[in-house]
Length: 473
Image (cartoon, rainbow, N blue to C red; front, side):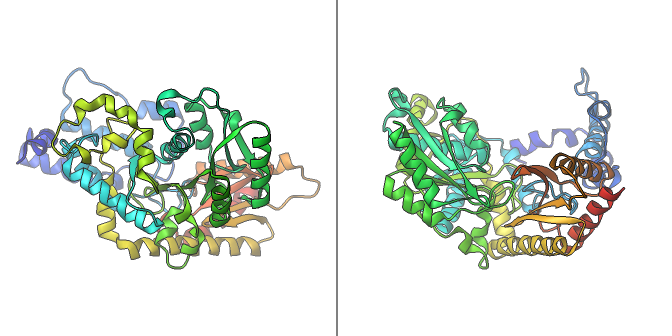
């Protein structure tokens, strides 16, 4: 057995065959044996008491590990259940779990080809696979998540506008970014972390979550007259609350006419690339300068499995030129293959293995079927809502369905908001559904999202019945 596998199996090697087999069987079945529900309803103090002790001065052996596993599964949310409709991710595909395990067994980092030759090639091929579907060459890197990918898009935009700014900074430049008023908060995070500031975000008003070309053009003219330099336009393919997709071709026209970097946040909606039925929703994405794509969302790769892709890889190389200070990391004969040269991190997990095995197992056609199924389920829920007098369909785009209760006579917006919050909380306490509430056009709504195959038509039918029922209690 290789040394790393021996290290990984240290715990079971120390046991006799009976105990080892018993522990392995317990791990395989503990989720069913534990009192695992969608949401256990425990408060933070109860969870802490259940999980403790958290450290040990002496070796506790397999029995203590087994107890800890049970405690965790009893207190963790069951994201694999069809009632989990709260997030853009859910159950991990089995092959992805194995990919994650493989990464842990080898326990390497992605900075250097010397220490991660196989994982480097796999990552490059996964980048190539998604890039080709976008219409790019194989340029990009896996990141720590969609927020990190969006930040890299803006870093590249800065470097594109001000070559050498990775070294000289942005003194003397008043930079700004234009994006919709419903863009993901990671744009704010990036502008904060880059030192440009959130006040330099120009929020273009939207119509049903979509920037209008005329408003975007006006915003560009206004900021230029004010002496600001537009660094990037960030468009969204699948917004957080509505699920809105911008007109990427129209925005690309504007970006090209004004010479502005165009970044597409397709963290949520990027999976549409695999659907023959809905691929046109991303028409124009091939004209972007950079794209964020999350495989850990609808495709079912384990968290986190995100990538940043761009049309011209030289911009990323220039933006990450600080890595030349770490030349001691790239001392192998094939250091040109080392991904650490284009990454903001040195220590980075081999996340590409999760997508690799999932893609081999599911296939591109299987990914497309997942997208189509989630779209069908969301359409089904939207039609059910439209037929019921107790609820209103506020928005339905992509697989996002936003619902609000039909107002009672003389009901204020605030009272309607309270009904939404109360219903959401009660569903969670009952363990019948987990959804989020979010503000849309000044009102609180229940936001449903179909993001995994287990969320089927039966599940959303039950969800709507339970939602209406808890409001009437």
